[in-house]
Image 1: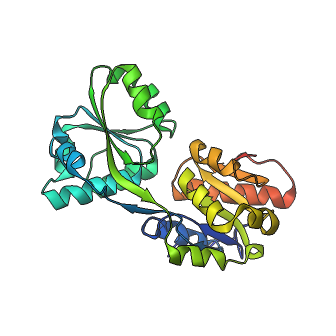
Image 2: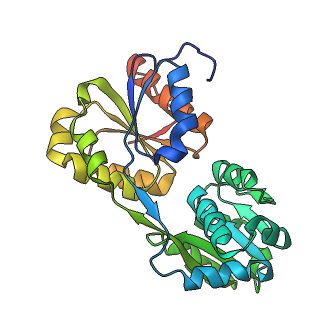
Amino acid sequence: MAESRESVLAGRGILVTRAAAQSGELCRELEARGAKPIAVPMLRFELPEETSTLDAELRRLARFDWWLLTSQNAVAFAVRRGAQIGVNVAEAARRVRVIAVGPATAEAAREAGIRVERVAREHLGVKLAEEIADELRGEKVLLLRSDLADSRLPAKLREIGAQVSDVMAYRTLPPGREELQALSEICWKEVAAALFFSPSAARHFAGGVGLPVLRREAKHLLLVAIGPVTLEAVRELGLERTAQARDASVAAIVGALEESLKDAAVGGSSGAQRR
């Protein structure tokens, strides 16, 4: 367990809406700072119902020039499906230049044995494409993403002149009955902040709780978005307090939480991006 330390988070409930398999380290760090993490995933992930396109791209992974990793889920499902069809994704990726959109995605790739050449300076897909535009012209680029992924990244890559294979690696599904029941039982007066890792999670959260309930019972709630795209969706919920973590690393998320809650306590200004 992480070492205990004093923090503005002590005694505060923090709702973590990420999938349980991906939130263990974060919840442990929150507990180490005295917080009370409440893990209620607002998304589920599954392989595509039809996997022939994904299978074909995995089998020819080594023929790509670049593999742009845009999420930890993309890594997990590529490795999972590769094992099912007899493809060693980590080995095949050694022949490809692999770049990750952020440090958490890069770490997930490295843990899977995938060598990551670099991490984007700005943790956003379109910015990643712009950052290495000169190197991508005429190159074969693989994207493995969610069925709900933003179309701006492949559009930008094609505009640059890359040959893009944009493939669905997994489906993003709403929370199940158990998660919605857990959400309905939360006492919002005891929750200081909620964490969102994708626009879909924010929307499912709003749908599960109900916007009238949120605006009545959770006016005080700090909504923390991981990344600017998620921040847009979070702000659409219409609550007063929002903040943005610069990336999905535990340090960045906890830092944004502490900074924003400390600012609320003293009435000062915060470095976290806020509403």
